Length: 277
Image 1: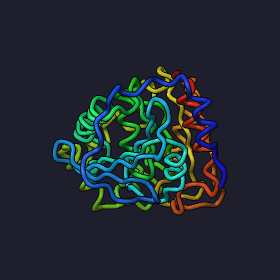
Image 2 (image 1 turned 120 degrees about the vertical axis):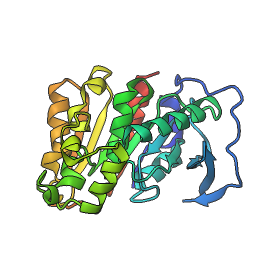
Image 3 (image 1 turned 60 degrees about the horizontal axis):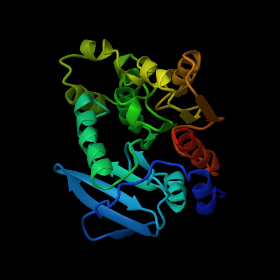
């Protein structure tokens, strides 16, 4: 696995926004994650994780996991090795609903104002984590660096709706559909179907702000079909003039996520950070 060295990144990013003059240390007794300091603590009562690099880059850039901290984390590890912080906020079963975005807003403010992290995090949306990341980016493009989507859910009608609800070609999930209705306070299936702020429908704010998207997905995904999710986002975002690139994995189902060589992911975030100097 090859990725840019910290020295190269420092050279590239020397003009990144300066960190807070004296950021607070992360609370709690650190443990180890992939050899790096992991801090577990709460923000407004919600479980949070921050992994700190040995040598943070200028401007203290960070990537924010939408869901499934530690799963298929090769890109996460590579970025921490390269000087990025990695963060996660534990708000499962909210599917990127407005109440999840509200909790993310509190977390973002804490990370930036108290701990001196960059005001525009990069987002990593794996599977249903894509709903969180894209909801955040649409609501706060000025607080978004770039979005990497990995076999991501971009339309909840496709998943967890899918075949069980007659809303898509994927396997779907009756149980998760019920959770989704509760998360969004939908009173009926019809109200959920009528919702117009799924990522596939809400790309204009990102395109107007020129937020870069990287889509990595298998073209044989039976859970989150590409033709209803990443493929739709790619076509629509490109038509809107948004900066988008993709890596399609021929014949691949929903798992495994990620890439064997995560260099494209690291370069994607590095280029995005360089563009906002």
